[in-house]
Image (cartoon, rainbow, N blue to C red):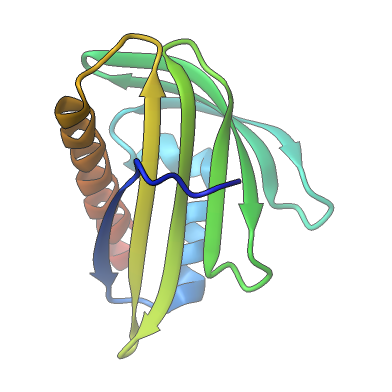
Length: 148
């Protein structure tokens, strides 16, 4: 799972400990309850520790609709969670990660994302789309964790 020079990055601070933030991120089955664009989630495979290794998502984000599977990897303390696309319909590749850092009683979440679609898209539009995806995801994550 390599880092791409083409990835976008964004951070947000959440008023909750790292463990609480990691618990929400890794509770994939609950995503349709709080991630607006995610309509369906299926845990395809799990590691021996019970964390999901492959997850299927059905996404409807208006102009972008997809049915795709991501392969996940985790740091032992869950401060780093990363994923890569296994297969998708409108995506050729996706690599992303969350880095969770304890910060004055809260957690700073840094989200990195690189997505390549099957339809060609100008670089500037691709970066803007990634930033919108990340901004929405981080705000929804913050709201979910802080309201728990």
